[in-house]
Image (cartoon, rainbow, N blue to C red):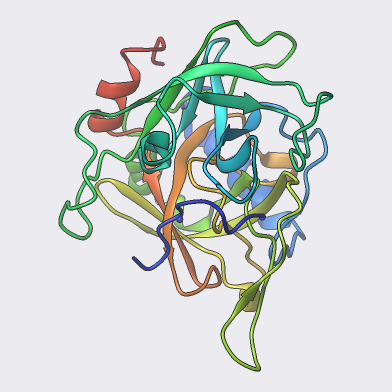
Length: 284
């Protein structure tokens, strides 16, 4: 899904379903889905509330560069990952968001929203492996975004409840972002496709649920796609194809292999994530 420019740290980038009947319909629909996405498909206007986080981080490329992905969760609130923090390049008030389907290059025709990047103050790269890294952030926009319906955050403990009902293992999730679309193997080191700045989506199967993490398959040999560099902060929606919902259950943070095995995503239904996000949006 598109760019190597992003600090995606690979190997180092509806409401609560109230009845079992509703969950059963979701599972049945997913079972019938024939999607076999490998590395993603062009999104077009399928997910208009997913945008790109832009700031000038590349000294060889003057102007705004795509750094990460994210999602509009309120008219003036854009959700992304804390490790996308621009402070290594520019100040936190020098960031922009675009919901255009393609952001490379950024031109006078690109629709941009200025904002301030606010990471979870408890974010720490040095958390023990597998612990809660608090890798969540928001961009507070100067002006409300009109004409785009924000995505919904999950009810508290949604994924735990789905696991308890025994249906989580059969669910699919839709990842969206502006990151790398393919990785080529053979003849030396793996190579990523050149950045084209396009928004893409891919479908992943459930692998594991951990206290702070939702682990998904993105193995192309099993028909799964997923996230890569440039997709950090981007959403994972509950469901896929005709059963996809507008609920973001997690965001892209890291993964295993070279973008071809697992996607390790940060859960948004935990008390930790909700305690931060509740400062900026009304939680379900």
